[in-house]
Image (cartoon, rainbow, N blue to C red; front, side, top):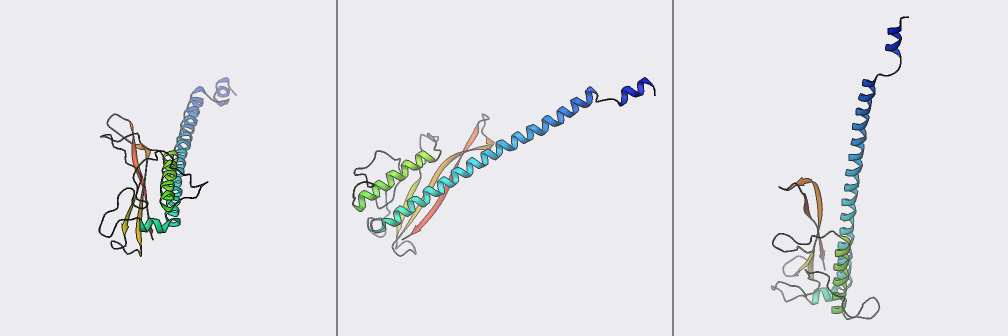
Length: 190
C-alpha cells in the first residue's frame, strides 16, 4: 500500500472536525433556545395560576359575606360604585382597623379587610405596570349588578383581574419587548 493511500484513510481531517463542531454548536444553541422558551411558558403558566387562585379567593370571600355583599348594593336601577358591597377598583392602601383575622368585625369591616387583603396579594403576586400611557394604571376591579339587571336571585358580581406580561414575540418601534395586558374574568351569582 502506498504512503498517499495511508494518509487518506487515517483519522479525521481538519475540515471534517470544523463541520462537526458547527453542526454540534447549532444543535446546542437550539436546545438552549428551547430551554429558555420553556422557562418563559412555565412562568406565564405560574402567573396565570396565581391569578386564578386570587380570583377564586375573592369570590369565596364575597360568598362568605354574602348578606352584606347583596344588602349593601344600591337600589335597583342605580349603578354600584366603589364602596358599595364588594365593588372596588383601587390599590391596596393602608391596612383597615380592626384586623379581622384576630378581632371580630362587622360585615362592613370584613368587606374592607377582605378587599385590602386581596388587593395586597394581587399587588404582591401579579406583575403590574407602573403606569400606562397618559399616566393611568389599569387595576383589577370588582363590579356588581342588582338582581333586577340579571337572572341571579340576589346579585351578580364580576371580577376583572388584570396583570401585565412581557410578550417576547412582539417588539415596538424601538425594538423593545411589548408588555401585554392579560385578564381573567370571573362571575359570581348570589
